[in-house]
Image 1 (cartoon, rainbow, N blue to C red):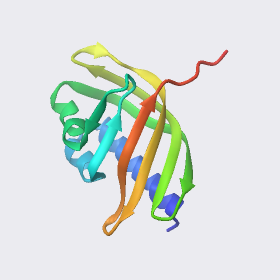
Image 2 (cartoon, rainbow, N blue to C red):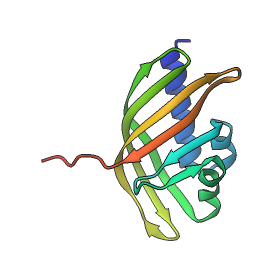
Image 3 (cartoon, rainbow, N blue to C red):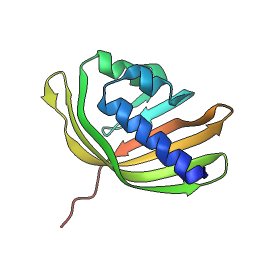
Amino acid sequence: MTAQTAVLDLVHSWTLGEQGNDAERVDALLTDDFAGVGPLGFVLGRTQWLERFRKGLVNRAFTVQDPQVRDYGAAAVVVGVLAQETSLGGEDKSDRFRVTLLAVCQDDGWRLAHLHIGALQQRN
């Protein structure tokens, strides 16, 4: 299996965990020092990221479209479009975002170390 294939499999597994609101599945995919930057600029560590589900986050659909992988050996960067149908505390948060993920290869395989969700340029 190539690094690109392994990283795309990791991204797919992560999106399935997020879509399934499955903190346990997502937990198994993150590095111990994981950090996630949300679309409003907030930064969540691993524990905080996983607690989102317990605090009322509900993903009904969650996919990374057109993922582009840049392989750097023991690390890879993935840039794509995050399309989500999501609510938080009953408030709709569905949208499309630019997403950048950093995957690292550790002894037990590829894990997500960082992700950044940001604004997606609007089409004219």
